[in-house]
Length: 183
Image (cartoon, rainbow, N blue to C red; front, side, top):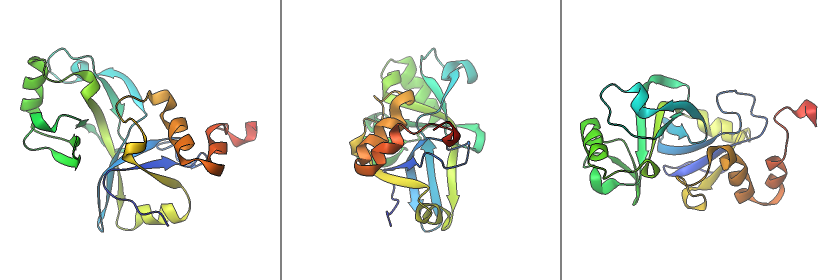
């Protein structure tokens, strides 16, 4: 069985049956024996971060639905660990979180571009053993993070690109209809 670890991508099977994760790509930001946390990378909302956060500087960065847990909370991933002392490193060039006041400051100073960051309302979470059970049911596949350009891939194509990265028989999934009855 594939092993989930921090920094890997979870790719949803095409007929997962959960609307929260239908054709989703999730970055695992924390994985331990107690559970797993991640963010759905390909569910943009029709909102910009500066339109939902009071006194946030003008910043043309979209918000994403990170998952069904704590959807009233804002989270962020970024590729500028040099700008944040208290961020949690996923790898050498990718972090999540950091001081929110510092975030506003670096945006105001123009040190951070929308292409350097992704904002999420909510996150995806699995309790102890839950993700492993879903992996054994073949609900997810795992990809290393470096096989996909996290901040460059368009949300509309992300799942299909990830499926194609899996190769082999998985490429049949890329063209599978959302509703198998339409096949």
